[in-house]
Image (tube, rainbow, N blue to C red; front, side, top):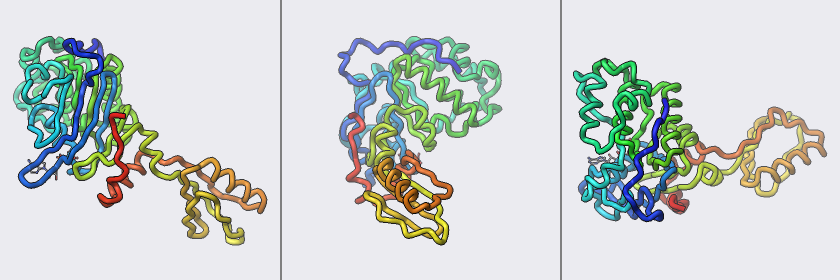
Length: 325
Ligand SMILES: Nc1ncnc2c1ncn2[C@@H]1O[C@H](COP(=O)(O)OP(=O)(O)OP(=O)(O)O)[C@@H](O)[C@H]1O
């Protein structure tokens, strides 16, 4: 898949205006508040991945950004415009990939894309758009005959057709095989390199790691953790694991280290990996102890995600950070 041309530049706006600006967004369904005051910015040439367990409020928030729903509080702007009340001004800049598109099955791929293009200001040629998502060879196939992954790529074609400067992608690679997923990542990254701003949701942590410049993790309607992948991973301790023989002396207390020992297995947690490792290796050398299977790992995004997703709200909320930072 190849991004071929840069997205159309947005109409003149002050350079300080973010592509997407969400301030204290709230959304209610009756008495239930699904989105509870989230804020973030996304600038041209940047990808924000919004993560969270099922029901965290990701789609509810994105639907406001897409202009499909009104906020019950706060504001959403795309290049300074309100997606719902200034729909036509925003629509020219916005490419949207919904979680489920429900395209009619009896039209062919080309018959689906062509009329869609006629509603846009400066659409890509249909052939070019299909080429970008590797569907050029499927132009005459009926939508109902496409595989799940091909349908997802057709959804993506429609999102890309108007050369959008802002892409909102709700689980863009769900249902795609690993190769197609990687192709979509390359495609999205190419569009971002050409200046597009992207907000995406995903359940694939690897997708966030590969694509996102910044990540926001939602839980129960709030952003509970945000930052770069490294910043998010650094909220969790690093891990050192090894096994000890039965006759090894007791481990010393190492500064800044929490030990979980179930002989012969030892797991150490620390926020200062290098000094902890140095102290451990020094002790082992002095006492001629073999640390079998020694491994030292910095915390991963996955570990941080699981810690936040599993946490009680009271534990998760103080970790909130400003994803716009
Ligand atoms: N139309 C609706 N009416 C009532 N409640 C809704 C409606 N749509 C969503 N919800 C509720 O709002 C909460 C957030 O749902 P939302 O779909 O935004 O979560 P999500 O993070 O996108 O989840 P997923 O990862 O499963 O897509 C959930 O508790 C859901 O049940």
